[in-house]
Image (cartoon, rainbow, N blue to C red):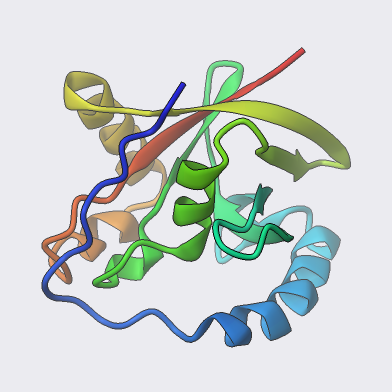
Length: 152
């Protein structure tokens, strides 16, 4: 299913340069896996996408919220003015997205939630991780909420 890319904001903090994440993320992922796929009280998953421009595989750690047999993730970037790069990758290659945690890897279908479904999912995310609510005041960007469904 195609995903309609949402526009960036007009205010908010800047995202760090991409090379910073590529240097730090492997170390952080190793640390997160040793700590039971958790960081600062958040349950994590490792999202693997194909780079929108590079075509290379990229993996990033994201907070996850269980939604039945699915998972919810938010392209929050801590309230940054622009969407995180992993979101651009998902939009460019929605059929090649993988999730890993708990030692298991799954290919997933990605659905960008809208309207009432998005509001319910957002409420669920904020209930589990209240810090996400604070990101709204930093930017005027709509933060995409995605549902990841494992593909059998």
